[in-house]
Image 1: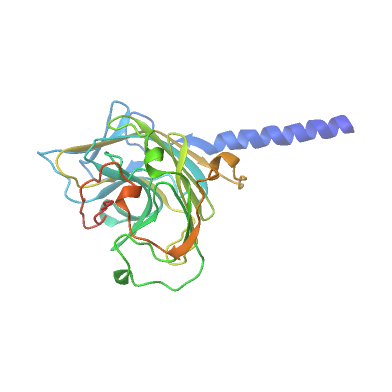
Image 2: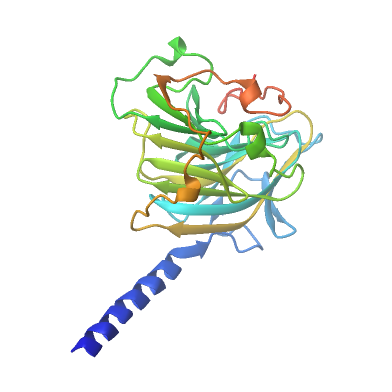
Length: 294
């Protein structure tokens, strides 16, 4: 009887492992844009990577998004290698809404080629543009409060009561970013919690329960953003692992001693010194707004 129970338990574990493996899948075949939908003429595959490019001959004048058509994941880990030219602005949308004319709204793992917005958890919808967690921040938004009038808030200041803890020094967390080369984002969503990792290091985290904004699932997409002069963005090794059960927080993900400072406050304005080695120029577009650490 004991042997039978042991074998049964081993079988359950094996089936669980098999299910976990089955949940992990590649979203890009490295050859073409099968399974993706984007504005004609703006996205292609080059050297095994999804590529978006704005040139002097064909400048991008309006945001557009390449949307994965395979579903709307809820809890998941998404790993993406990306390369972005120094003057470019882009991002990875998740738990977002696909809109007409290849537009999108929702959460975004932000990025700029100079590093200024790398590691920032951003949100936009219509005329609303919010930095939910800057690099080096763990931000929590309470599940209370009526919608606020954004015109009364500071530029890129998120609505809702926000509690902020420090994960680490923003400049130190950016040291692993390779300008003009390949980097890796890992986005982990569990319930209301969003974690953003850069090259294996946790750089920002947001737990968003603010009712007018928080969503539990949505599309995945890549952003083509208007820029200043020629710009190029590339994505490859796009791996999605859908999660079924919450995992305990690892000690390595917690703020280290001397790097934990919590405060309850209304959401703050962007502080350039805390997020950028070199302040990037402002980038303006009707759908994406002007995102700059300044």
